[in-house]
Image (cartoon, rainbow, N blue to C red; front, side, top):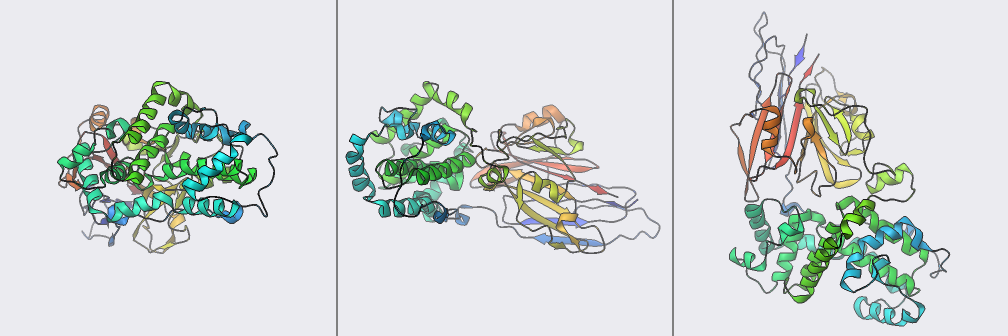
Length: 520
């Protein structure tokens, strides 16, 4: 029997990603350590010779502040705008799921402005109010007719503060220093309450002093909480407001405004976990836009509004409808980042095992088992960055990523080994490795990634792992500095494969990678 034993070293947080393979005809499998660069496999065969050896080195640039993608995913407005002028209202849109979901998203306005939480943007706009709202659009947004409304909405949707935020984080040394300080002192900020500890005085204690402390604090908190999507929610909330008012003022048709609100809903839903997080982005966005102070009366009012909604039980009630969707077909949901029209959770024929050596894992409720096929991950909602027809050379390994449910910021790493003597299509080779970490996969904590026993990144701890499966091995490369924070590595090594856990200073699992050796 030919046994192919694979050891992969995935250095996600360093500057390179190496995949090393050595495979021979073993009768005795020697010491195989997941964290070593080279896995030594010993063979006891008659001529004492080793089989073919192939080391494949693949360089992967690690996401960092300098690697931020500034540009937003564009909306094709040719499919939004109706021909001619804005037309007449034909139905009561307030009964639609799109409208109701948007009222929850914009409830922050209702709380701040003593409005109605069951009305979009918190206000009832009657015919007698239209002139006042037209003045608001003109003075605040330079919108005074249909053309200016369309131009402003297009610009804010496809660019907006979310892009200026990304460019700022990418280029400004003060905000980068603030982000690094937060990572070093706090690890990950999991809630807005965690973020409250990062005050302007705290930033000053780190040597960060500027006339634009509001902008620095807002950007640092937005990035620390939600990464590159830190201010997407802020833009979409403000766009809902402008779009709705533009409709009520006669600048947009009902069809146009509802299409836009639906797009904003969908983008919010696939990026953030709940309505409280959406409102949190508004808090950081106002800090960022107002620049000079993040602790003035206006920003405190927003923070108080979020706390008030929480105290009132609004989030607990509204979040029951967070996954509420319209009756689109499956292709639509796949496009906007949802599995189907139900609850964004798959049912699976495979059960998540309690045994690590079964190599099962679940994504959003759907369970997989290594080795698995390319078609399985595609069917599960992943979009690989490499076409399945790509030819992997004989004897070589290949590493690729898969974006989940159309979300570019939720990716897993996969790896295969072509252990034949001829080139093979990627889709025909079993996947034997999967890796997920909170920086690339669960950046917004949207889709649960679990392994045996229900262990989950960002929620389970290293103590949970050892209580469930026993003492871990500490590899030679047991620590690594990531943005000023020391991350720790621990391992399990089996005859059938291995696991490596990436652990934050507070003991939380930041990443889990697993590899199942192939045997023939």
